[in-house]
Image (cartoon, rainbow, N blue to C red; front, side, top):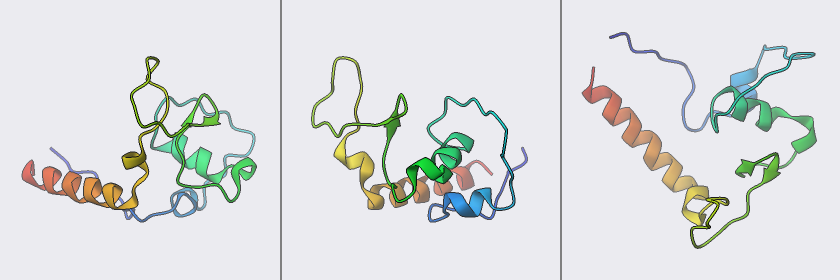
Length: 99
């Protein structure tokens, strides 16, 4: 197995990831909440100054305290930066166990 590494981490910004990539005139289809879809969302001039949000169907997801029947919305804990850091650290730990 070959481990894929990048210079990016949990504190990397979309601008750092997209630096030097010209997507002008390109159409991108993505269904992911991360990866290139997140970079495109984060670098869109339409969303300048908006960050740390979850989007669903091209709109900011509502923060919900209980699971909805249609599974929409985002729980407050999912917006917690410390939870994101812990998830990143745990992911790195788990990857190193498989190496």
